[in-house]
Length: 265
Ligand code: MLZ
Image (tube, rainbow, N blue to C red; front, side, top):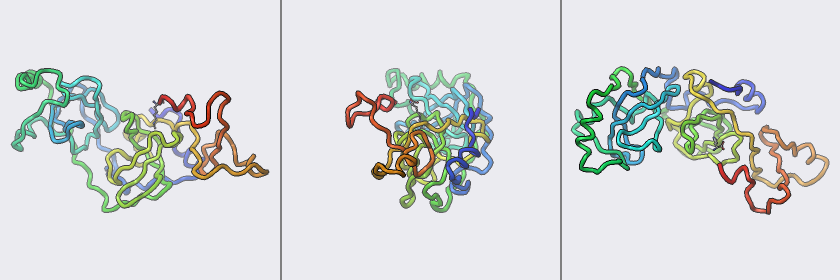
């Protein structure tokens, strides 16, 4: 469900262009999500990427799975695309001569892992091979340009996919900036990250696209000096690029102190 956010309107309002789909390491038609809640599979432990663990599907959102490692707690869920290379059918690890590992923070004694593994797999519904999809290839080079719009996973709140803008490009890295959040959630990643998607991705997959934040960007250069023009340029609530408003501190808030809204996000 898309809320009331419309890319079409927003792109017009901001006078911006979406990053072309060929920039992304995503398939041009999103993979179908044929998983079911409760299915088990093998997944890399995100906190210990050299170990392969058993995970359960605890949620479905667009082309993504919400996963929880068996034997872990419910505070460390993570999200993976159905065409992620970090998930595979049960049996793959053993076939390749590996051993399934307990997750980091396994809630039982390490010595009870073999029995725990037997019990967790006994009678389990295993995700069949046909629901896994091959990971798309990486584009040959970084084709992103500053200002291009995209949809990106908020890595601090990874269940959210949000409207974003390319803030900088450096070699094979890009700065993903979240619209309307004053930089608080921005991150650098490789151009072929699986966490970024072309405009329209969520509407194709049925994932939730968050609306942009309502916070105004912090001006990089000092606000224009008081004068005839400044009254026009200092529109307080505009999200239009290039005319960020610098607002006065609220009475009671000291210089250098964060506004309340920013103190706990
Ligand atoms: N905890 C935050 C969530 C913000 C998500 C921003 N995503 C770019 C809030 O207070 O709303």
